[in-house]
Figure 1 (cartoon, one colour):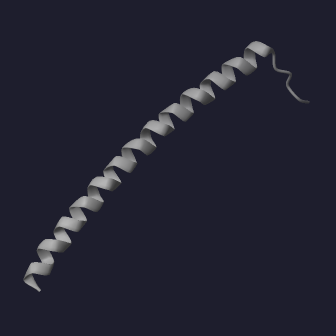
Figure 2 (cartoon, rainbow, N blue to C red; figure 1 turned 90 degrees about the vertical axis):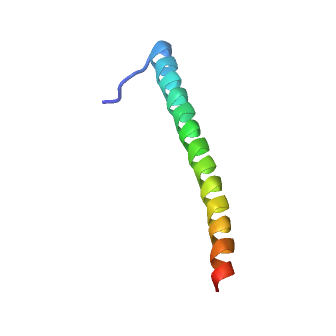
Length: 53
């Protein structure tokens, strides 16, 4: 038997989904920033290592 949702129920569900999406966007942004920093550090490390080869 399917549950019937009221407009208020659906609005609450959508609100929670939007909050979840915003939280995920923040996490993805942080991961992107960390990835950029790691790439820069790797480039610096490659340059240093190449001096000793």
